[in-house]
Length: 387
Image 1 (cartoon, rainbow, N blue to C red):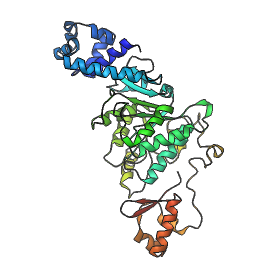
Image 2 (tube, helix red, strand yellow; image 1 turned 30 degrees about the vertical axis):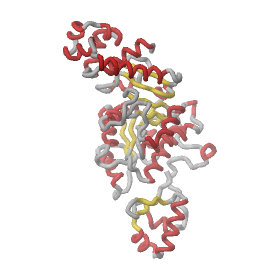
Image 3 (cartoon, rainbow, N blue to C red; image 1 turned 135 degrees about the horizontal axis):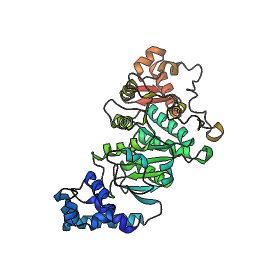
Image 4 (spheres, rainbow, N blue to C red; image 1 turned 90 degrees about the vertical axis):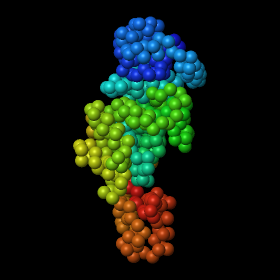
């Protein structure tokens, strides 16, 4: 996209009061954003309401100044490297999957490897307030699937999103068959020069360097509440399927899953404890017909990729057993057996094991340091399954 075309697309995006429906009508009638910008008010009035036509044909000084400021920021951002791009609705590199949406973004800011848009992809989403077990699951599934060539798509949020991105970046370093790159795409609800949450600044840098960052919002856009549901539709539409790792009954992750189902994408969920609030959303999805998955084999089978992709990280490459072999249970550990996989209190553990407070506390600390047990809010403990 040359400078003139980029300016024209950005102007369409930023003109106050001109919505995406009107923009698509103008483009269908006039052929290009440059033609829209050159059209007279009378011509525009035949296609869109007079107020919108006037805003396009004769923007006020304030609107013109805001546009020039945004263009200067965008041009400077693009000039910083060949890994930064603007993708318009008419660009051959624009994700075709987004055309299934009733409101595909007109212009997308991208930073990173655009080749990932051509790879088969899976959305991995879940709770911002994830349990330690949920984090483990998100990382392990994303790592194994990325290592086998799937691109993991998520939203850079706290909890499951971040764990999925981290796992996918790890999996990218493993040997992917037939040269498929794997990796991860983060679709964010801010401008690409803003990172939310700020604690994920380093993660965003890693994704931009080895994966792909995408946003439909202009540079400088802050994290506003209404932007994240909009972001979710892009996550769902870009992917062949959506895997929900943990989610409460009322959560953005379930919105993403429903959007995916409405678009004809596959929906999968990992089950959890019947006592865990973070598992209830997944259980609700399973009741509604989502595929219950326990291993990466299940995910690839649901996506119709089992015949083409061999699942599991090679022990020689990762030093770990392949995903899907089940939890490794140290023999003869009575405390782990007593814990089970549901959250449990110290009092209940003492009753189950007969251990005194000092010995029980010491054993739990030892298992926590080994990564076998997670300490939860409310003085509860939970066994961490091998993912």
